[in-house]
Image 1: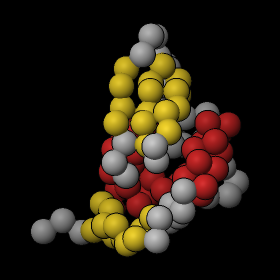
Image 2: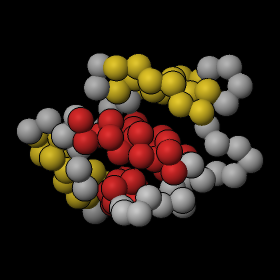
Image 3: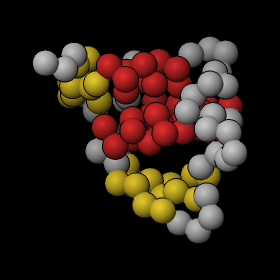
Length: 99
């Protein structure tokens, strides 16, 4: 049996995998973490119901919360830059997603 955690998302309790919850905690940590892997953020987005599509180069289209946003997948390092982590945190907060 997989261990699940729950998050409050748009006034609904939604189960979340432990790995996604850990990523969410990293995103919301202060000061901003420089060790958040982009692959973990993508997995979190998918866990929240996002559709992810590839675009030109390192661009990634994320459809989540009825919105479309384009992000740049980091390279050569797998870690997401702090500015992107802050942007993602703000977007999640706007839609009621919290650790």
